[in-house]
Image 1 (cartoon, rainbow, N blue to C red):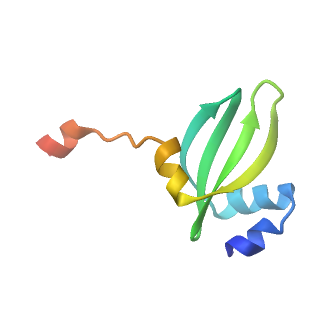
Image 2 (cartoon, helix red, strand yellow):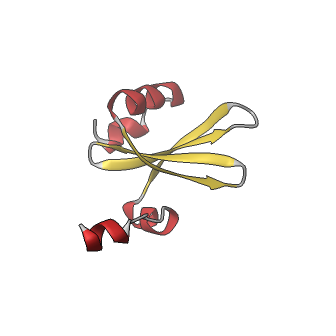
Length: 83
């Protein structure tokens, strides 16, 4: 699915597409939300979930440049150096 097609979907259909075809990449926490990052074909999106309300509030497409700033990459340098 292309990003423009995804953007036209309602929330329920976006979630169905993500859970069927997306790959979970990472997560972060912000202002009471757990935000999960997913890759769908050639774009990335986030699911904004509140555990307090037990509700998904939004699905947002995220620019790849913002991913680097918002999602730190955890590398195990011991494994890289020592093989």
